[in-house]
Length: 311
Image (cartoon, rainbow, N blue to C red; front, side, top):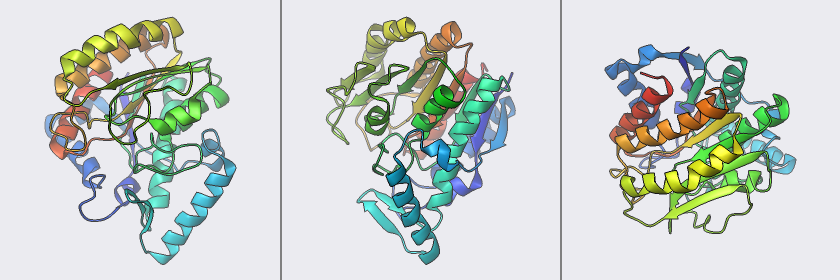
């Protein structure tokens, strides 16, 4: 059973301007590396559909979605970039790219749930884990992984799900959306202090937050994961696992100061896969978040995918 990769050419058209780290070349680096290493042969490729309004309502407020759509349509028609905050900028192609990113997460969830594939990776942008119920921020417009997790729960009837976030930045948007929803357990590590400055005090009891100091290396994180994540995840026994897969904790990435390397991402993915194999029939949906050094990103995604695809 192959691992599915969901992406779309329109995700490359979202462009926040010259020099912005969240750039279209991120997806090119991933796809080029997969072809160069032959790993693409172990994957099945699928075009991401556009997310529907009802999909997005699972994680965001009606008011936010209508207001955001109005703004993005205006940018689309006028062609002038608009900044939602100093780091989060929309261009004429952002609306469709963001809808493709969220749509990929929903379609991947459906495919894994139907048994068409056991695992899926969404190579999409813009990322999502900073988008709250009612605000765009941190490069994010729609919270792709939260939309997918709620789709599994509310539409597909999955009993409970885990969201695991290993981006260098705290997934404040995901926490905002799922805090207090006891059908979801969110486990994450993140550098602190670092943008967005949250996460040291969890918003709900369904969180396992691991703030770590700058320059923490992979060996230390592995010990924390085994000690803090794994017992809670085993006790929770999720029936489906979602990953916010950020690769900016890599030691070559300038947006953080952690010391992970590809072997650490491989190890983390194996630990997540063990949880999924024990409790969720191996079902995993992973969504790309951060990772801004193009070479380190491509190598780390490949390490992640080799574990997901059992190659």
